Image (cartoon, rainbow, N blue to C red; front, side, top):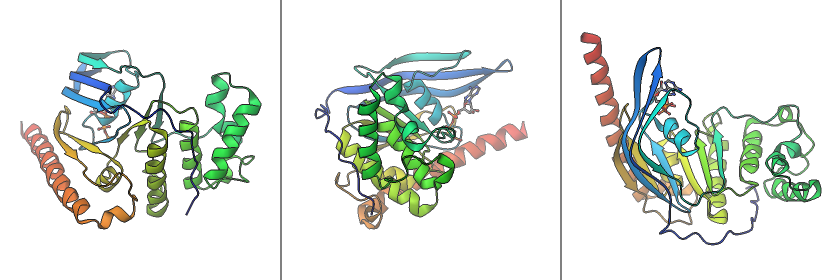
Length: 279
Ligand SMILES: Nc1ncnc2c1ncn2[C@@H]1O[C@H](COP(=O)(O)OP(=O)(O)OP(=O)(O)O)[C@@H](O)[C@H]1O
């Protein structure tokens, strides 16, 4: 088992204060003079310090929603409805194909966010070394990314994301390229880091088990244009292991309900596809 970092506890989050709210949010893209409605009437509230996940059929707008939260809407995007990120100072984003800077050593990768913010070298190295040690990466600080396994690289990315203790961490399929065992270990690390830091975590995943194991609430989006069709309360103990919880009967019950709802959405999407094909 990997030792996990003891990170300074942030002021305990006040759960009644919303961090992110959207009201009837609609997002459309224009591509080659064609309008693509990605999201429609999305209303949700994410409270400070929560761990929530977004699931739904492929192309339903999950990444689009994360991008909006991160303030990353590209030109030519229509935004309707309202959107608010009250009181957030720092948002960090860890996405699927994110990689480390290959020409920088592990420690220089990890300290990059502190460097950008003007934290003195000695201070940033001290902080990074503490985190690397507690993450089982001691001795690799001067290695280059190509010398690490996929799981180790992902752990370095996670440390880099959290080193500045952002208020909100957005995760877009961050573990999808890893083998099942490494993935399970990192899921446990996500849980512990979430509990230790008090950051708000918003995860996009295709893996329903991952969503249940990690989250307090899971939002299921419909096929495109994505709308929230169901909110699942994950009433499992907060102090849990992402691996062991999978054998809990309540976990399995939620899993069955989620699969059933997701299958309905996917079948509807296919019906619409066939209808389009016929016309
Ligand atoms: N910049 C863009 N320009 C045009 N269309 C886009 C753009 N970004 C996304 N889309 C379209 O918007 C829809 C939603 O895409 P998005 O990536 O948000 O879905 P997703 O649910 O994250 O998909 P997946 O689960 O497959 O990763 C898709 O039809 C996609 O093709």
